[in-house]
Length: 294
Length: 299
Image (cartoon, rainbow over all chains, first blue to last red):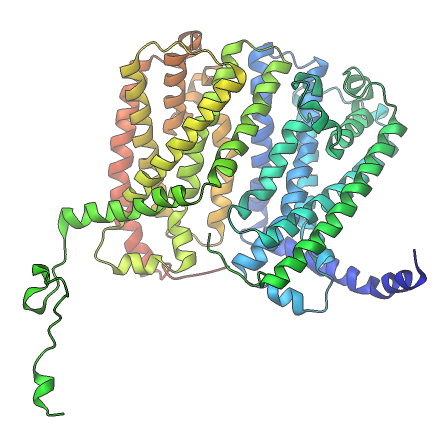
């Protein structure tokens, strides 16, 4: 890295930090202050718990409630951690829609002394926090009532924390690319976060081993960082179960971390430049203060 | 200009010499004619808008299809019988109607308020009930196209086998389920007249729990009788259950209650929801006017 680049980053760090912190606080207020805290807490956990319950009932109907099978833990944990994917990616991209279409403040963000990328990532923090609570509750319900085979003493905490950290950064960068695309498209921009999260849900084998997919679809799953992220999280929590499935059996934990890290850097770089490109287009075409009412 | 020019009213003479404008007065429809005109006018943008912008084919058909595929592969992973694949495809198609009622009917009056149209609706001589009916017809038409595409593509991808037992009953169940469902949407939309920023969250809250309790991806017979009975307040619960019984070989053995009883219950729900929606709309409109909620915009 050039010396001037390093100086520029060091010089701008307070701006990044301030933008991120204020955006995180703002995001939390927007997410939570429409009702009282108790109702907000109930609202936040009902939706994902209902989603998990659909899978539990589906599984129970077919297997007559055989929750001790390894495939159940595979499905349940994959689904629980997938809550992060929708929450973080949608949280960041939704900030563009919210600020441009609803509050009509995006133009003011651009004239304010902030870093817009740090601001948008900060806006995703609130959903990350809510998602974290939901993930914990979902896993706790699985552990206490549905025989999800978690052995608290056997959990590989360092692996879990490293995987979680890399994954959150990866999801934030993917959210940033969606935010960039949201800047330049009009129709159906509301659904873009959910749409990508829905596609990844299928292709990353979040709730079933990739072997179940037709052979010609599987390569999509293998280039998605989410696939490796979920595998690492499963291995850290229920290693013996995760390793029983053949999808990534040939790779050890270190290799998986290396692949996840590599894909995160690639996706992160693409996201950074994609956002910059979309932002440039939006500025050139005067789209930053557009209200579509679509 | 003399003063006499002010004493004579200006008479508007239309270029086409339409008799409706004779004697300087514009003829305005009222009563049932106005009601029907309003229904057609409000359904028009939903139908025509869809034809003008075909991006819905991607966002409203292919993306829900991805969810359908995901649940199909879950069933494949746990070696479910093939009919369950069909259950998911049918459920995924019917889910489009629930989403349309939730976001395009119930919360529509909230969106109209946000955009400043609601007060114009209230001021106009047209009935709010007719507007909701128009939304329902337009939404039903456009959503039917989406649902049909999901069924066709889903059935094709996963080679779903149907064994339709009774076409007449199938048509009756679908028709009644839609009448009751959109009646429910019209009824709940009046509640949204009073809501503001929380409207979005309320709609959001009713997505997944209804997916669960209405049995979009599995037969509701697997719940206890009382849970299924309470879930039947959402017309799609019984509608889906009856349709599965009528179009799949294993359907009758997995049904909650018999199809004729489900048809009777759907008739009752249709009448109750449509009648209640009329009463609630009138009441809520008055309440919203009294409390100044029609133009309120708490962001």
